[in-house]
Image 1 (spheres, rainbow, N blue to C red):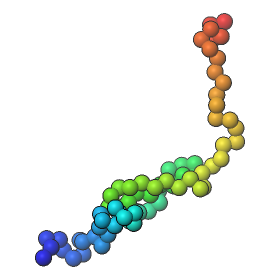
Image 2: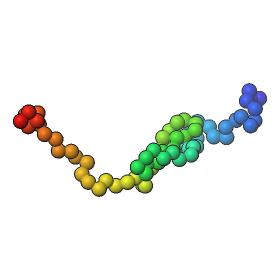
Image 3: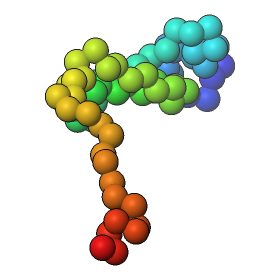
Image 4: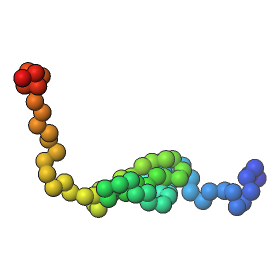
Amino acid sequence: MSHLRPEAKSPHKMSYCKRGSHLYGPTQIIGAGIQRQVCKVCNDVTIDLTQADATNSSVLVHRKTISELKA
């Protein structure tokens, strides 16, 4: 006999997560089209980048050296 009520029992167990079958919660939109889901049992996180926005310009920023800033 379990100490939990039948309605309080989770049908999903940690052993399922160890086999790779997670119980992910609702999708959370992080921003820039990035979506995140967290497993309700083991807190495993999955990130979906398929809808992420592409950058239009180079990410690198050209910066001056300290000697160039002094002049």
